[in-house]
Length: 255
Image (cartoon, rainbow, N blue to C red; front, top):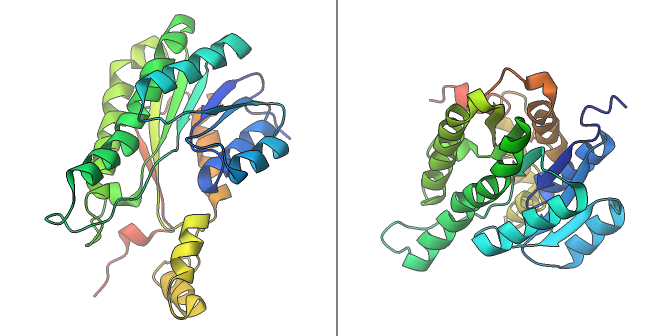
């Protein structure tokens, strides 16, 4: 193994399932000390703690600034610094705009946008003190293309890409890089549950795969490898940039 993150201290939010867990696994394999996180200490959290016992697990709701600050403080107390943050935690809120409740709107933005800002804000002082750091935000294809019936999630993801670019430029001269990844359809636990909700899950899987130029659905590990690149020093001249991982679908013209 190349050990591309040897001795790096990394916080990965939402790291007990799906893309977040794939990122945590890969980063540990590449030599990082990884702080695992979820907003609940459940069976998924227990499983990832058992799988990656050398790291630190912190239960924290990223929408709560006090809990995030406590998580970062625990990280620094344990490892001495923060080198990389992967803001992966998020939630889907898909509803009709005029039927959406104020609570749905607020919860979507408090997790999908403010959560990333809370973690970044808490980690930035440590990064600035050492003159180096990388923040990787997991955005979405919804931040580039609008899918009917998914409001207000795309609004939050557009804003997250804006946050990425703004922070990347703001702190570029001080050694901080901020980039984002926009996955398309990736076979996470949530995606599998969504496919299983159809009368014929296999037929829906094949229909979705047929929409993609690569004719298959993406895997969490494929997002993880892009996060690894952006987190590593290999990407030291990449900043304020978003990378699409959607098998080319967003560039395909449909009749």
